[in-house]
Image (cartoon, rainbow over all chains, first blue to last red; front, side, top):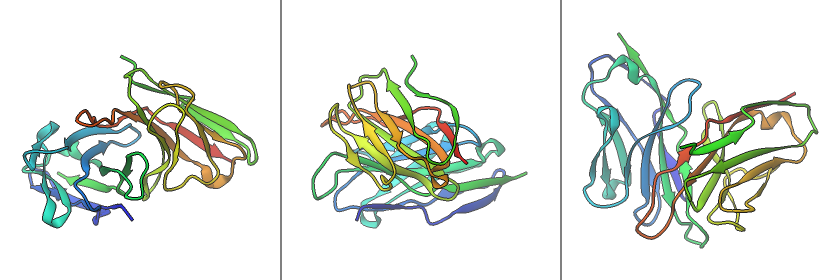
Length: 117
Length: 115
């Protein structure tokens, strides 16, 4: 079955350190890929998206993500984390079920980021 | 631009009561989604709709019904609320069309407590 996995439930980094959040998916074709961020008590904000083309995509707030087809991954990176980046990050995948039907959008369980001063 | 509007923002229900969560979008999107968010579980897809008049089950549809009467509106109904349905509910919309896909746009959420 199609699925999205974020292996890290909680990550802690120091301010100024680099960050990589992992996302893997299970799907037979190339899906549509997204990263969203959610601050406590807030809604979801899109960081970046991948539909096709260049596999390295740039997003807002200095984030980037790289699509690797061979690894079925879409990892999120930031070279230098700021205290304001503390939030929960969600990877999402849009795909058509192989048995037919319309495209669904499925989220991973999220990675909570804590930033130490 | 209103985007995606959900009502109500907060609701407390007693076990066994029913209610409908409303969602409307003004972006002319064809696809709409209902999710629930629980700590440690991420966003789980309840139901989705690719166009008016069509709906599909997501990951956790039991205990819910949906209605997509027109392109703008997608409602979620709890017929007999249970404490396990205490959650934050998010509605989202998206354009899904060959060559014209967009990201999902979310409402601000409905915090539902069932006592």
